[in-house]
Image 1 (tube, one colour):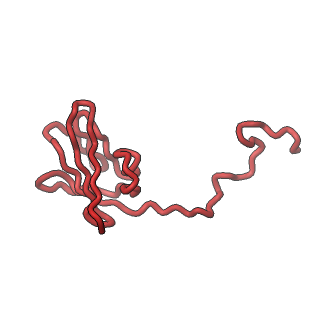
Image 2 (spheres, helix red, strand yellow):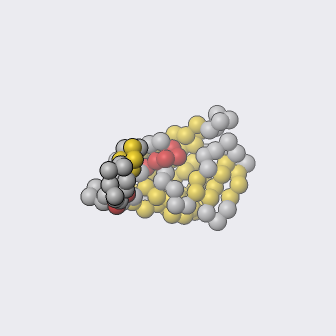
Image 3 (cartoon, one colour):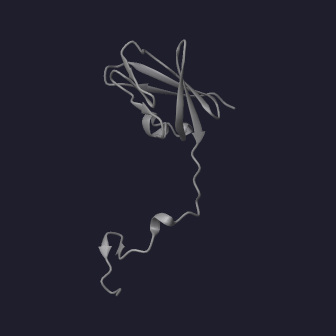
Amino acid sequence: MNKKVAEYHNRYGDVYTFTKKSTDKVLWEGPFEYVREGHDFIDPSGGPFIQKGKMLSHIVWFDEFNVIIESFEKVKNGHIINVKEHKVDPNDTSHLADTKIIGGIINTTEK
């Protein structure tokens, strides 16, 4: 597997790096001197707020991290983020359920 690395610059100018170690582990490194931690989140001062169940690519804006956050492990130089693959079924159209609104226009011809 090629090494995938993304950088996140928070509002205080701190830089955090995210390195994909395997298909289910991402190493998160950076300055963690001031941080809030809960059972399902880690929130360093200035960001990024990382929470279980969120898609990592929506936080670090890097398509290679299109994975769902499962849990965290504290390590000497940061945190290991345990992740799982985000599975998408291209044939799933359940979000397009029958509706009388099409493209923002109400269909008034249907009874």
